[in-house]
Length: 507
Image (cartoon, rainbow, N blue to C red; front, side):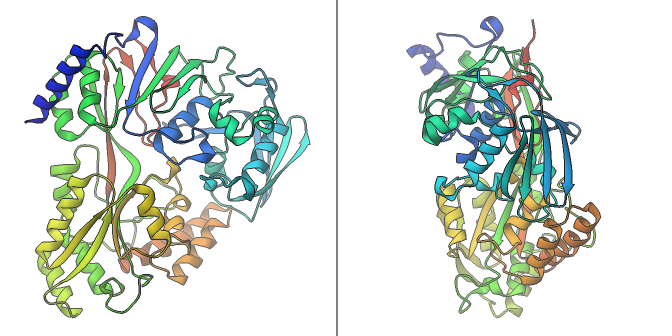
């Protein structure tokens, strides 16, 4: 059965059982949206799921806000921010910020939130949000200081991720209570939280606005619908207003619908192939420790062809272990690997593998892309056996040093700085498969300076060496295709955060 036939059948089924009896659209000023996953814990510090990041922007706020259109850091909960010295950030909070439960949020709430999240006893999942800080100190009712562990270059970018919670409520109910009944200061409050069924957010009428502005849509209803064709069927029958992660062939079919808008665009998320250059799985009989083998892998894969035929509109082939728009992601002096099966076979022969070799390839998403890569590796003699796992399993196995070859994606937590990706994977962390001490030292030098020029001077040679040594094969940027009701005014952004507080219905 063709894709369009499967969608039509699913749509007919939905209509027959009455799922779409309540029509989506502008009539009740409600936006109904769906995705294929949802966070197990909605607190931003307790999940790394993309849908959780989106909920975080809707329910909570941070001191500052990064404008996705201009890249400008704008004041939000804070009315001013200054760097007192290389390790001290001083925030002057807006007066009269009100949380969803009526609690007034001030400097004390900032300090309490940061210190609670830094407490190892709380075992924060998304510790990266605050890991660069050592503590927070209240100066007065509206002034708080954040103390960094050491000078940290991307502090401005990371400050946009330090969401603030009303601390009287947080201390009273604990993290578990906050997860069950979330309370923030954001443009929307949680009206219903029923994991596995739906999450309903209601516009917070006492919202202060700030850099996010006042939301126009009154109610947001989220549902997890794992199957893509079912999401499309509900969109077609009026049960949903907005979906994303639409596949290229689905987008082509939907583009003929007059009442739908289809938009594709590049994101800061990238797809990459990691190789065990550092020999973490053992050096004996480990082809990945040989530079020539890693170069052969790079030459064996037709990234341009895969992007054109499978990945689709909005993607670009990458050559660096970072997104070109991220601060410090130099494109100068890097080593590029063009598609050349003949060169790949010659390199394998030079490395002592004239007949190729077998290797396990771990992956967890976009299976058609992975299977195309496996076919091209096999064409040069690298017989990759697919080990298909969950995303969490892939991450934990890499950190444990059990992965020889993997294909994965990374969204940098929507942060536009190489510290959120290159340093994360090559800075001597548990995620570092290369374990190059020179690279790690350069990255640490860049991360630990607040001088942009010092940072750039450190990151550039690190990125050049990573490409020269083929520690990674950067594949392509991750495109994202949205489909939504044409009456909805919605503007996508490259950081994969649909800002529904900026959306509105055309009247």
